[in-house]
Amino acid sequence: MKRLICLILALILMTGCGKQEPEQPEEETLIVVGISQVGAESDWRVANSESMKSVFTESRGYRLLFEDARQIQENQIIAVRRFIQQRVDYIVLMPLSETGWDSVLQEARDAGIPVILVDRMVDVEDDSLYAAHVGSDCYAEGRKAVTWMERCYRGGPVNIVHIQGTPGSTPQLGRTGALEEGLAAHDNWNLLARLDGDFTQAKTYEVMSRFLDELPPGQGIDVVYCENDNEAFGAIEALEKHGFRCGRDVNVICFDATRNALKLCKEGKIALAVECNPLLGPLVEEIIQTMEAGQIPQKQHYIEEKQFTSKTITQQMIDSREY
Image (cartoon, rainbow, N blue to C red):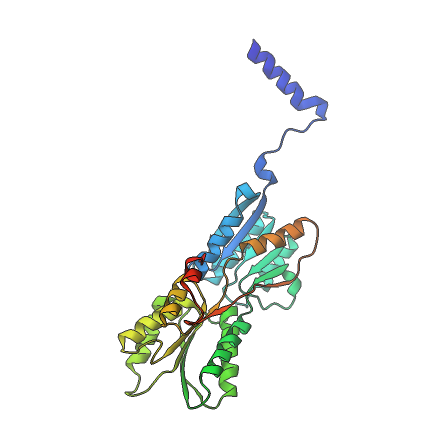
């Protein structure tokens, strides 16, 4: 009888003559964020994903839908369309390449879902198709490397091997563009080869080994310009296997400055590591909270970054590195 009375009272309280609404499930109060990540091709990318996952948790007021595209742009487009169907509140996109986004971003805007770009940019006719971009100025990173080369090589020929990242991606375009300007400005800089490393250690080792196998006897290499850390790891492995002493016979330049790269930098095997900070989750959250408050976020957010050489890196810097 007590259970019956309690049930009747509960029903009365819930209905309240139609004036009192039932309490909403807690999940409906969460901000739903759909993230389309490029993949897990590098240490940088893994750290970037972990930064996002650590910020967008239920305990912090979010429901996260995370999609790994496995380095395939079509997978990212499918993921964005799935997010639109799921009616997420925000889409966070790390675009594989800059082109091919107009249609799907238009679909997101038509659905009223803001898109935040992370790391890489998109090349679209209407930049109102995305709300904001958070990442690095990859051209400026490349300029840092070129300036360092100018200071180190003031005379005589400079023989350069250039290992590119994923073609058409923002880091590749920016870092390649800076090096091309440097080559055009210095008659003594010789480009021996431009290889496709696709931002991975394994592919760089493969293409670099093939290049070194075919290198004429006595041909020296002064600089290997790698567009991320993992390419540098593969290049160093191939160079050392072929008898080159990194830091003595050849200077390796890389971008990202992850913990493993800083270790090799301290050892002298990497001559210059230009920072590209992957810990962008907090900045993305700032943008979302700005929009949640009904305000318009700043369109471009560049993160502050440094550069390291064996003379400036310390063990304390390495130990305190979060990625």
